[in-house]
Length: 272
Length: 272
Image 1 (cartoon, each protein chain N blue to C red):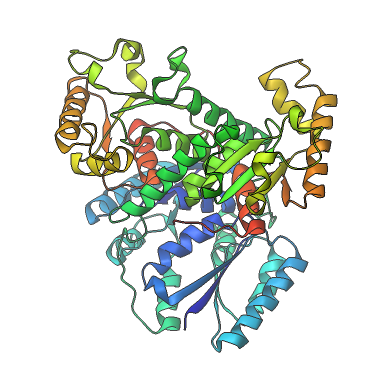
Image 2 (tube, chains in turn blue, red; image 1 turned 60 degrees about the horizontal axis):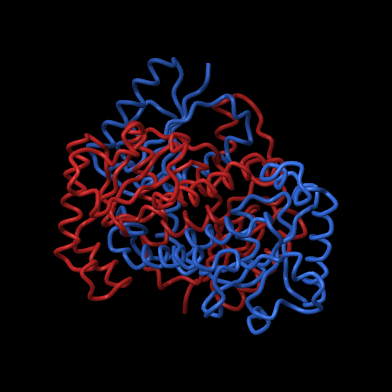
């Protein structure tokens, strides 16, 4: 039987899901049955959660694993009395931080997101709108307003990466497609020349590009390996000749592509 | 002087940034100067990181705080010998999990993301393409392929939420704008009738909606408080009459809106 794993958060539970996923992939994933309980931000809700954990302990015959990123001291105390095996991401840390910093923490929920954080919401939405207007070279006017402009051939990952940068970090990311028309030209596409400082290239293994394009337009010239090779070779030559930073996205998740771009370009997140 | 805080990750560092942000907002944010070091996945890189931490300790005159989500045992051991005050998110947990589960972990980097995870990338990109094609009612054909269809008046947060669901969870989310044309009608817009089971409404306080619309089209009928009130009132009436679940997004971040929708609708993430 699978071991039940509870993920308890006073906010969305997304961070604790990611953490626990990283931890559990160190074991055999198929061992576990995950249950996320988000928005546990009152004693009433924590009591219901504890009941659910205890019922599961009885039903399973083994104590469930309970991962918590709760901040509130009362809720954490209540959770400690469940029949689960508790892994508390903050328990130690808050006390040690208070000690190291020589000051008390707030022990309060909801300081990092949500209420009061209207300006972060607005930044993200603005950045999404920016990414959508400046997608695939659709708009070039005021391109300099972008924090970064991604270049790459069709299906190299430009659009999802721009949207991720916008949603996660509030970064204004435009993208410009490198197409066969640009190939014969010696330098950068003219529209990009004056924005050189914010250009960043994407590359990808031709075999992987072919696989992606094949799903889009099977058995076309566009998705032939020869065409993919030609385009990638040309794109990488352009990046080298123009000394543009670039990243090879072949084996990366969107999150990793975004982080690599920020790391190398020095573009900073606008919001948390 | 600000206290330097290092965030060390063998992957993107995004999860550890979120966690540490939650922790540090329990204190005074302005106390800290954050430095994220992502992709620390070799002994060579960890040694460089330790040097940087030690140099900072000397320069600051106080030991920096070091938060780590490293998985590799050798790297964690190396980090333990830095001059920083170490907070290791996994240290305890991996040992305790091995004990509770009665089996050894892999202690290996990169199991949860990246290499080998091509299908998760494809799922996300497909979901983004889906969200873009089905944005704002642009496409209705095969709307039933959606995992969820968000309804709401203009600027209630539909597009960013759909894109977030796609990027973060690989969920296929469409959205349909409720406009004045739909107002007089008694029931659902006809195109939605057969997809009732996957509909989910967004609402928002009229004052907040006005503020958002005001940025878009200042001092128009569209952004008047009276108009916002009318539209929201009508939308909420529709949700109630049709017994559609809905969420009020007024004080929520995009992440919270997405999590609330998943929580209430039961729609599951397709990828980690």
